Amino acid sequence: MATSNPLHRLAQGAGTGLRELPSNAAWLLSQLVPSEEAGPGAGPRDVARRVKASLEDAAPVGDSVETRMKRARASADRAQQAEEEALAAAEESKRASDHARVVAEHNRSQIAELKRELKRHVEQTVSDARRDAEERIERERAAAQADADEELERRQSAAEEETQAAKRDAEEAQQQARELVAEAHERLTAARELAAEATQAARAAAEEAHRQAQQLADDAQQQVQAADERVAAAEHAARAAVATPLNGDLRSHTKAELLDLAAAMDIEGRTGMTKAELVSAIEEGGRA
Image (tube, rainbow, N blue to C red):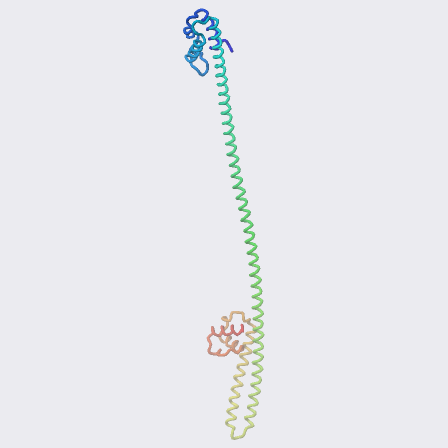
């Protein structure tokens, strides 16, 4: 070490002092140890007490000066070693402190980086979750649209079939009405023939039954007229039925037209029905 070291100076001063004043070791130590240059970790008084105690222990009364010098040098060497160990411990403490500071700074940097990484991870997770949700919504919307299209196609197909069935029913009803008109015409023709035959039979009857025969002829004539009216009404109704489909709005027709159509369909009790009753009866007859 450099000559400014207090323990080294103590050893040199101790040798000189012992040679000059061998009987006053305590005074020598108090003069040689400077108060402002004590070793690390100890005050000046502590160093003086330790050196004094070492010298007193190592130099009992009666020993030679040389022996005392040797002991003083050994004690100074031990003190110097202790100082070096203290300095080494201080340097180690400083290195440990610096290392702790570096570790703390490194840990703070790692924590900050971890926070940034966790934040990025959270943001990425939220972004992925949002994207997954949007994709799931799009898939569900597409599936719902496909179901809606399928249901619409099914309903349109069913409606088309129902419309075609209604048209077929209307055509069948019109055909049935034409057949009924033809049948009514045939019956009216037969009635005319029967009336003519009855008239001829009445005329050929005996004179005494002339009045009764004439009455029968009048009745037959009235039946012929009624039959003619029914034929005319049936023909008119048939023409109206042919011109107007049954699935049309029957309420737009007059009551007379409805009566004609009811007559053509041979609906009983038609003359005593109201217009609404005639519509209902004709619709039921068309569905029968």
